[in-house]
Length: 242
Length: 291
Image 1 (spheres, rainbow over the protein chains, first blue to last red):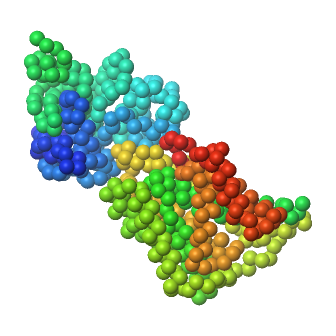
Image 2: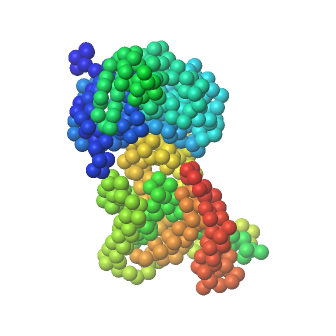
């Protein structure tokens, strides 16, 4: 692997649901240390993209290379390789305690001491979770559940974190806190992040680079700050006319 | 009064054997949302293997039981590979899994009938000699069946609630897709579940064979475990155990004080009454938690 090849490289990816084409020849890449955002409307194929990279959805053609290697076919092996998805709608194990949820996040790791270190990082970022360690996941508020979903993914010590709509169903003030935490994960812990979001302005503000996905095709790409200024993006995704 | 205590002990013992089967149903149901109808074939198969290990190869009881457990695990895991996994990978509706399970059941039971013949066999162990606590006589096999069944259930509880693979199984019972996102391998979970339930059905088959007889259709008794598991709440492990114990005691009391002819009638009546008042079973949860 050459030094400047991307951590994640998606090439001409085509994905079908039944007979319907959900992603049509998508190309994108994520370099180590980046936050990359994919923005797009409902049904643009954002979740399909995430599910495909996490190997819970199979693709028709194209290639997904992680660290120069083709993606494994099985979700649990992809996690072992270092890609962890925070799924849409959080999908906390509601009957299990916060602690058990976190332990599941660390399912692929065996070194207790390293897991304790990750736990400390998580408590520093989300002190609320430490207070609620023995509470059932289902009793947490929406924002706390999203924190738990991210923390649970961190427990696997991923090299690439996939976030599917982290703002979904959260109050605006909670969304801000969530995005602050995501930026911290990247800046302070050096985590590489690929995030898909409907909330385009927030996503563009925090990311290094972004792609615009429309009906299964990448329409635009560029630096987040540039896309924020782009006329078409402003009209279609930021609700700014002018 | 002595008779009453004898009945209770005997009821708890048979209830414990039912609970092995009911827990098996609950385990499969909690993760895969279908009832493994092949279970009664596994039970009969387990009993046959132990029976022939003793009567043909003169093995000691414990060795025969061990051989039976291993072979039944192979059968159970093998049937998962052949009959369920292909359907699971194609995301087939659960009805197809049930039909596949019925097919596996018919095939195995009829093969047993064909190969070994349909006659009733007495299990070649000395189960008769009772021992006494005061004036209460307790069958030694009753005691052994109860003790071993409870020990196995305790071991299973420890595995599910105190080990990492156990946590993976519990997570899969809640949300199998998200469990795989945590790195829990679905195929490994399937192996664990079918190996465990295979072992449970073999032990149940051996004890049931000792108490009654060994014959190809002996697995029909799993309908009792099915009742127990519905009474307890489908997919709930504690429910399966509680339902089984209640059913075992109820049955023995009916057989002892009313008539053994009416025993099964009461079992089904009991099921209907429970479902009238607890549609989800005694410990069933309508929502997500099952184990």
